[in-house]
Length: 68
Image (cartoon, rainbow, N blue to C red; front, side):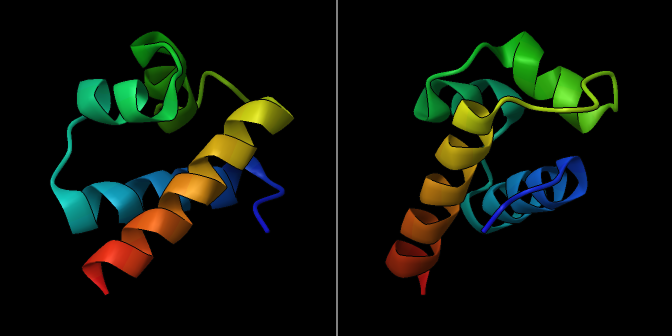
C-alpha cells in the first residue's frame, strides 16, 4: 500500500520504467493534472492526496499485471 510521498514517487518511476510513458501520458492515464504529477516528482508536493496515491497504486498493480 502506498502511504508516503517517497513510495508514490517510486511507484510513478516504476510505472514509467515499465511502460516508457512520459509524465503527460501517465497523468492522463491516472486522471490527474500533469502539473500535479510533475510537482510530486520534483518534490514540490510533499503530501500527495490520498486519491492520487490510490490512483498511482492501482495503475502500478495494473501495469505489473499486464507487463508481468
